[in-house]
Image (tube, rainbow, N blue to C red; front, side, top):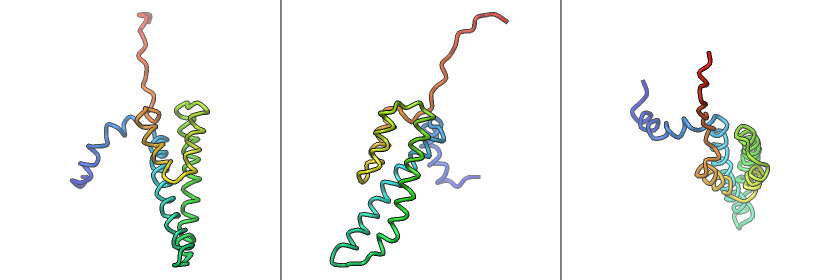
Amino acid sequence: ELPPGRLLFQGRLSGLQAMLSSDARLFRVAAVAEAWSWVGLLVGMYLKYSEVGNPIGVRIMGPIHGLLFVAYIVASWRVAAAHGWPAARLALALAAGIPPLATWIFERFALKRGWLTAPQAVPTRQSGRP
């Protein structure tokens, strides 16, 4: 049995999650994680280059952000291939990896436009033949 909090969480997301492919879910997680790792890296850079002069933030967040950036790029390619995105949309997703927090903004933008939802099956007419 799931704990009560898990049931509430499942109830709110179940409809949306059912419409998203596994590639789209991976893309969403990678986009948000990459965006927040950017914030962590910027904080680390501030600590390194300010009067504090401590490089530990960059030493920790630099590799984490690099890994999450690569994960975002891979997730972008996967979701583009799975959903048949045109090249311009993929280029926009990849360009979103450059400015801080833009991956999260692009993820929200893509979700609202239905770019991450799984293609729905189109009903076909039965010909009546056996």
